[in-house]
Image (cartoon, protein in one colour):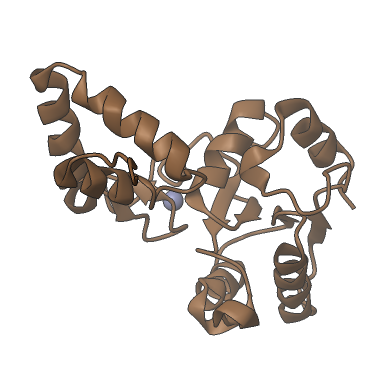
Length: 200
Ligand SMILES: [Zn+2]
């Protein structure tokens, strides 16, 4: 006798949608769905409203491609930041990670991904032309390449270095105390501080 019990259709659909989130499998998605069902309606309405509106509220900074509610992000518009120093990251969330350890006081440039031919991601799909333009037009002396220690991150860093051959200032990459294959997002703070200190 088949006694396999499945959730109601509406719950199933919710589970499938939650499963789209990064790092969430079926089990976790099911737990989240049932957790949501048990919350107050006011919370659910607020959450749904926030998700609904987020795309129209958030833009990309016109200078560095960080997420921002204005045309220019809070870092680029901060006059205290060192404009001679630029840190190149894969994703906007990497900025949060680096800001947390308080070792870098310059500005950033978000690539928007990595070079990954298997996934069809080429240099022209990233914000590399904009980066090269910034380096030409802004007074930058120090470039830190903070891509993740993955094959794709390394390939991207290598490509950027090639493009910057004629750059007269200092170029460094994060020291590889970082475990290979880890996304910057998941690196713990102490390791990230060490990686910043041991730049090469
Ligand atoms: Zn910015």
